[in-house]
Length: 397
Image (cartoon, rainbow, N blue to C red; front, top):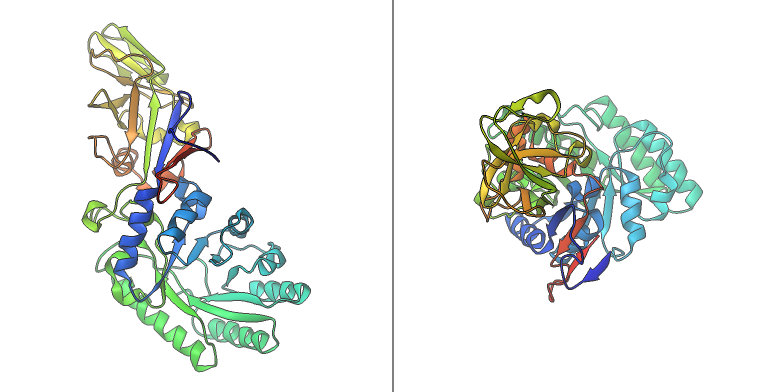
């Protein structure tokens, strides 16, 4: 990352501006909702498309003491980036033969939800000569990763405690994940809370002494204080996006979207009425008009499902994708307006200037805002605003 006092030194085809000041403010807002809990900033999948290392650093500056990733490779990359020596890093998506020894030696907290994983991490700790930091994951009702209650949980707890007594691991956490915390009043919420308490109580009654017990994701952090326990794990909310429109907008929670995606118009031209636009001619101009070419497409992560529906701000007005979104580009009907080539087209941002938001694109594509920001690809450079907490330095990457 090369720091500069300007956002860019040359015009960019497209750019995703990442406002790190907004991210820090979001972290502080979320921390205030769970004042008795530690804060894990979830930065998996390149921080939901925003850039893992810069966002992790900003989150730590705002008070996060843990970082969370899905894969061990993501966690190891954070550790290797430097600057996180005093920060706990946890990863939870393992497959057999994964880099267990590297994780142990890097001091990562690793999730274990089954006997095969416990065997592999124990062997890695034996080879490394260092106790593994293990968090036992309980399946309290999501039905994905984690150990089932009953005999499976009893066996996993028993063997983990035996390995702990042998000095091969330390049980640092007991945790689980909600299925429907983004659906207020869903009966599974209370059921999972009850099951989690039962499974934690079982492990602790047999000698487990975890440092943290945790269950709360973004929606639970926002709306379920009874689920906060010792640590909360906000993900999408940290980036200023509501985990569910039913819960409220970002502004309702005092959050601000962190990413603004824009591009420079590659071409503006006049066409007659009846002119087909893009593949399949799914859009035909109703009369003489001007078309603007936006140099972004599904190879950059713009959802093809938003063809004919995705909103774009050009010249202070909302436009709509005209016809199909192609691999590298799409067209908007400018309705006779004639901005110059190079004029800014804003796909989404906080909405301050009347631009669409990631939620608007999610609605247009029939998906969720998580997917909109996470899928923005590597051809789109990230331009970081407010990198330096005090000086407001910007940087491009």
